[in-house]
Length: 581
Image (spheres, rainbow, N blue to C red):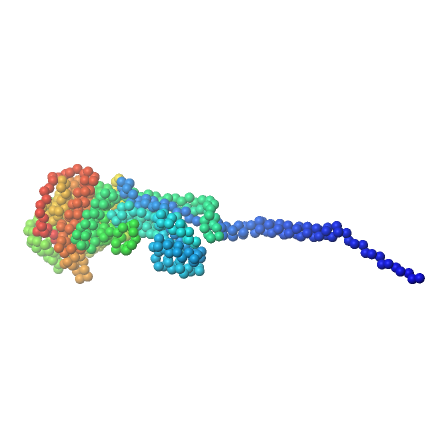
């Protein structure tokens, strides 16, 4: 009998036990993940917080400038001569342009009238370029048309554009700004710091395409520029511009300039130049056109300085008031010959000015010590800057005192051997207009001149003005400078232009300087025409008529009381004009 033993069966693991172990594993995984997340959160929010915030801000938060208004420029009566208006500028990120938008790009190119270099940026973008201006300061209407095209990569920026309501007639004084709204010429440049103001700044959020999607905060408020009130009277400026332009064209001149001063304050009421330009358009804008020749260009003043010679001699009694001089054609001074255009015979002081005698002026000058004579010219501002602060303001030139003797002293007496700007000559005339007091000049409005200084005695200035009135008489050199109803005192200058070999016989500066009313002058006006046509080149024929028209208008605008009788115009011919060269 055999014994059979059965192998005992292994017990099965319960199902519940298997599920429990899986749950424990899952929970362990979750717990480990949570620990890792907590560790990562601590790393991001505590350990590397500052670094990550900085990097995030660099990518999404930017500080951008906030443009500000440039200060306005007004004339003395509050009329706007320069003002800024908000406009749009168009720029492109070449990396974001969609090449499939060719039709829209063509439309935009036509709307903006883009030059070739800008079209090239759109057609063949540089891989490194991310910002290129397409058109600066366009009108809001044009910007809206471009926006409606919805071209990817095209963006808009708010800026300001300068407008000049006075246009060409005040362009040389006011000046203009460049594409970045920085003053380039004239008062825009002279007072750039005051007019520009201070740009502000703000923090913004940008999207992935660097577009501003939200303002975060203002960092610095923009400070608008300061307004500027000029001494210029827009009405007189326009009148002077119109008359000078007409003469410039009629006489086919090379250039021309005119200055009007308030004889009592030294304020510059008008300063115009030809050729002119439009500051609202920058096409064909060159230094030759936008230079303010009335302030920056110089020339020898010729006979227009003779009244100062007479005044200097009378003021210190170097000659008696009844002195007589003989003009018989020419006199010898050293190795040089001084000539008059005609043989005038015996002339008194008024006659020297009336006939513009070089011989008489030379004899008067030689009666004075050279250092005194030179000092009078120096005190009148010849050879020194007028001090207006205008960019490029000319100082002119004056011989050094140790070179003034003999013929050089005589030459100075009839306006050679020194150079002046139209503005400098006008300033010197204030010493005769305001009873011997020379005024400083100002392009800003003011009530009085604290820097005025006496050059001549009051009685001397009055005597010389009375003599200068004879220049405007029928047989004087500037009858066409008369102003009906007013007494006028003035002096002509017909100046040969210097050349490399001496002086030209065909090219001249035609000058007239004068004041009115002569009994108590309110205005001083100087007119200079550079190279008028050969048919008419005398100061009395070319510049004096312009003076008459501008002075007439200025006196009427200000309602200045008449001090003389109405005059009856007579036919004037070249025979009436006897101007020393």
